[in-house]
Amino acid sequence: MRLLIRLRCTEDGPYEMQYHYHLQGFIYKLLEGSKYHYVHDKEGYKFFCFSNIFPAYDLKAGESRTFIISSPNGEFIEYLKSILSKPWNQQVTVGKMKFSVEHVDEMAIKLPDAAPYSLITGTPIVVRIPKEKYLMHGIAPRHNYEYLYWRSEYPLELFTSQIESNLMNKYRQYCNENGLTPPHDIHDSMFQKFKFKKQISTRVL
Image 1 (cartoon, helix red, strand yellow):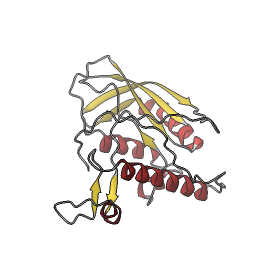
Image 2: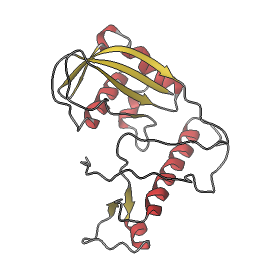
Image 3: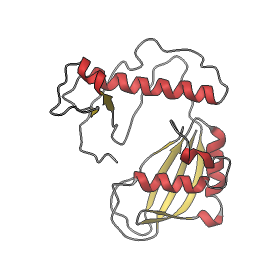
Image 4: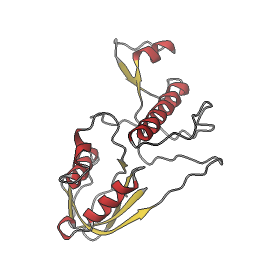
């Protein structure tokens, strides 16, 4: 499930590229006092994610922006929709960026059971590779790092294997925590085709 949040800029100002921390705090604040309050301190996977506020350019009062929250837990999304519809949550501050909530809508996303589909990201994917894995691929960094972050000069297999492992671990843990039986395990590679656009520098918090 996804929650599509339409925002209206209430002030002119610069777009804050380091939005992640502030948006995460905004979501956790919405969970305070609810049955989902534990998510903030929960170890491991949180089972929700969120987009940046887009389009990502400087703010002008009156302009529209969009923000998306997604989770496999439909009740979690429904709760966020209900709390964001309350009058006292109609003003949103993200860092120094200020918005009003114009509209909130749920989107049910159904993946095909057998047909191939695409995963597209509008923001960078940061992949952390543990020492034992990067050494197996003959990567010798200048220092004895416990982890490396994938770069385009490293083997693509390192990138895809970490992504696949992360997806499967989340899938299994979510099923276990919610009393679900995973319908199947994936033994073949999840990814059949890739389109690499570019590598960018990003701040890792």
